Length: 269
Length: 269
Ligand SMILES: Nc1ncnc2c1ncn2[C@@H]1O[C@H](COP(=O)(O)OP(=O)(O)OP(=O)(O)O)[C@@H](O)[C@H]1O
Ligand SMILES: [Mg+2]
Image 1 (tube, rainbow over the protein chains, first blue to last red):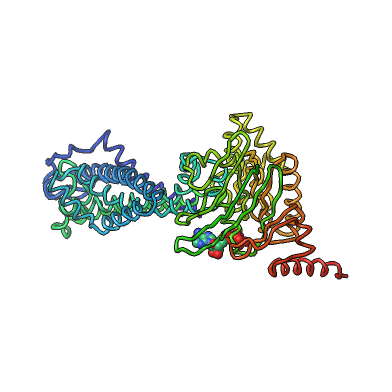
Image 2 (cartoon, chains in turn purple, green; image 1 turned 60 degrees about the horizontal axis):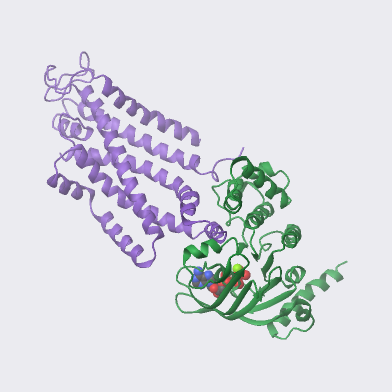
């Protein structure tokens, strides 16, 4: 049953990854090509038709996969790195430093990602980097808070006291006991965060805060197709389907990982 | 000159409650001392204070002096963490009450046992694996290879406590503190583990601080005993004397209940 979850997650997310990889090697049309005419219906030579500017939808969808994964993975890398580092520091810190970090994290978490993204776009510009930065920073606060709690919980365990009574150094306690014990929960959470990051990127792009053209983004495709959704529904449906496939796939993987990562939950044969 | 000298030890909780009050005792090299008292009387806190591992926020007063040949005479209270850590394991180490939580659930048993062997004897690779096997055999574990590869939840409680004992012995401490090492085990296993601990400590010439709430168990293992009640040492002396003529009412009730159990067994058909 668990394996099924993991496998179906991999199939869904893997399909999107495959599309993104292929997009680097081959695209049906150049992204700026408007030779197909406006709002051509699905068929040949434009598999999914064209948008209101005459660009090939399938091409845009493929580039959108690349952007969604890039922003998703980029912000998980950034948010994960910053968050785990801050969480470890807070988890090991004593009283005042720990309290300070906890308050800062709570404020950061309450701060809306959208507002952060708008501020960043105002200071920098709407770009791939700004989207990753905004989503990654917002995510790092959530990851840091989780890491902090996990570290505290592990440090309170008897096996940490036991390791210390035998003179194990702090460095080894962190690498041998703390990190391996928070890792399963952290990996599952980072996978969930990846799904949220993909959704966040779509929302930012929908609002015009995402990466600008010629980068196509699923969120912007949705926004652009909105006005013509009754005459050309494919333009809105296709990116929607891919967002759902990727997010559901990633969540299924997260669920499946839970058991793979934790030997006490693995079924003994 | 005693190996361990505890003089006027006081431990207070973060809120000021006195949990251990003015406890004094000494353990000579190779000697065995029992620390007996009901649940919550401060036995474990005394052990942790000796290791310099009291929970954060607790304050300690009074003297704990470890005088180990080769390590010099050291006052534990107020010692820098790094110097303390060099002392832990070599001067003293602890076997805890609950072997399931005292072992890291995500690390294979062999790897956990390897850590003190690696550190204490500088072993690596094949020599380390052989030492792990030998250490498991020494605590009379049949199938040492299977146990080394198992995770803690995959072996029985008695086997886990044998592993914990092997880990403590691997540190080759001058003083072994056993904090109710058999309380979590069922009665038949208790006797075996106790006999094992008794034999190995004798063989290696270690001093033993044996903590228990069970007078029968303490009298089987140690020669002298300190009776603790509500954080106060109410009585101390040779086990034989205390059993014959208990002075304090609490000690009297301890002796009486041990006798009752004994005679109940004698009367049983
Ligand atoms: N981390 C802690 N914070 C506050 N109080 C504590 C803490 N740990 C223990 N205590 C209190 O200190 C007292 C002594 O605890 P201790 O663990 O030393 O008892 P014990 O004699 O080992 O009992 P047991 O036989 O149940 O193990 C208890 O009243 C307990 O409630
Ligand atoms: Mg205790």
